[in-house]
Length: 303
Ligand code: HEC
Image (cartoon, rainbow, N blue to C red; front, top):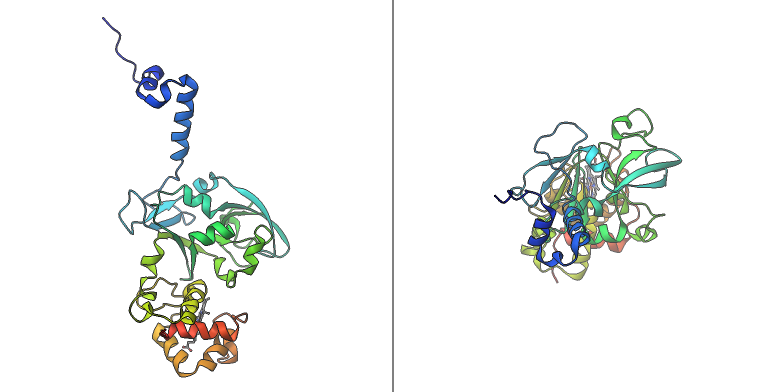
């Protein structure tokens, strides 16, 4: 009687893998390696088990749109990590941080090919927009350890104010070109709890539709400035993606931008110069032209 075929007989597998069988055992090993590598995905949990789990949502292959999944801190640490030296970032002076680049995180997630932005939302409702081009050019990263300590040790110990559970930031010594990015401070969110993979055209649809479909050149430039700064805290037109930390309706900003552009510019540069107890942070670096562009976007100036 012929012996029953072994389930994992390598020669049988090799015969079934037509392109590889002529290469012999080495070819098989390479084929299996390539397969394993392509599938080196982060394990996604359906339940949160710790406050240090990172919530992931948006468009994910194999999950219904908008489903929430959780990545464990230990699994993030198992991705390729890099040690970098930063100055005055989380604590005063030099600090060694262990990081995972957003690009490596992205590769380890089941993200469909047409997703082109990662939206990070923080526990205080602040949000940061990371488009794929930004990620490729400026190499933002998750901080997993500060001077060897994980986020469970960040409060009270080193960092004056706890940047956990997750902080994303960019290093200008590592990528000098990032220093030329206007609102770089809004690509450094602390307290990130959720990341969403999305299609920019969907999340910002309403900033390109209706009256915003035929913006003047200056207003279109203002839209870029808005997305990279104001959208961190302020809702925009319609259902445009944003953080909601400001708790100010878009209609209020529109009214000020239209009614008193000079006051608007003064407010954005230095809010306390208009209202002593304003909590909004200063954006003193904007030029008059840039603030006029933001006003043109908010008021949907037509071409
Ligand atoms: C870090 C969060 C944050 C960012 C980023 C931010 N704002 Fe604000 N903004 C606030 C908060 C909070 C208020 C509410 C008033 C206050 O306490 O300052 C506010 C209020 C305002 C107001 C006044 C509204 C009123 O009722 O008087 C204007 C105008 C404004 N923001 C414009 C902007 C523009 C334009 C940008 C982008 C360049 C921007 N803000 C970015 C948080 C933010």
